[in-house]
Length: 335
Image 1 (tube, one colour):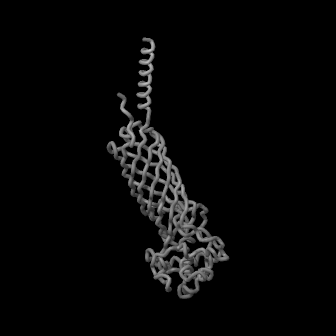
Image 2 (cartoon, rainbow, N blue to C red):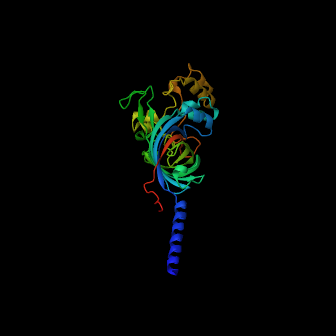
Image 3 (cartoon, rainbow, N blue to C red):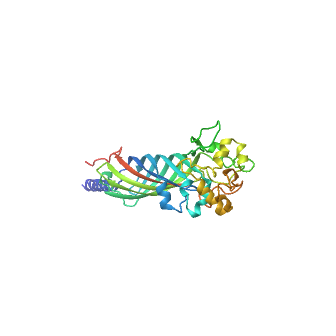
């Protein structure tokens, strides 16, 4: 009798422990998401010290597809594929007093980035055991790393004459060694088109029904390269760049292009105003100073990348549609 009673007590305790464990056990599960949103680059061509103007003038886009695994009420892991387009143009800085050297540089670029990221997610609001009973609104933070491929391109000057490209054509900049990479003046090899960055940011999810959320996410990518815009060092001379190719010389020194290739705006008046203020007032008079007489204002070795020494960054805003997948393993039912 005593043994039987003891066995019943032990069985009851085991059942109670099992029930308690089931209530505390978090159901690991996954979700998939599709996102679409905006992309903004900040760097040598788009200065971050003009945040409002730089952001509004240079909005591009991003698309993403990702998988998130929820390991606990607080922590999740995410893997994502993201396609990003960023762009910038020095001509947007015309008339900005502290940016006239950048306006005269007259660089522009477009870059399509393919990014594979791995991020850890921390939910600010603790999740429930059952994902279908999750909170209506869930804010979260994320941090991780990503591998990406990029390829900055720019349009050929409208006055370019040569067999390598046609005027106004988009061409890849990295193969042109626009800062003389590989030459004696700049022994550094050309920059890599594969690089690493570190995404960090925050997001918010809103529960629509048991399996679907809508979300918004804002994240910064800090990149371990300063060449998303093809600018990161000093000028090479036009003669040195001619040793590479006429196209390299045309793309590496664009200060005296009279027509902005992207906008079609005439630059001559602003160029003359710059030269009259910084070199000699005589350059304000076209009859005395033809374009062919303009001086070399960016000699070999002068800074091409401005005052900033920070690597390029880009900011992504994504609006996301999230679908929660049912767990593969269900908790056993206690009989």
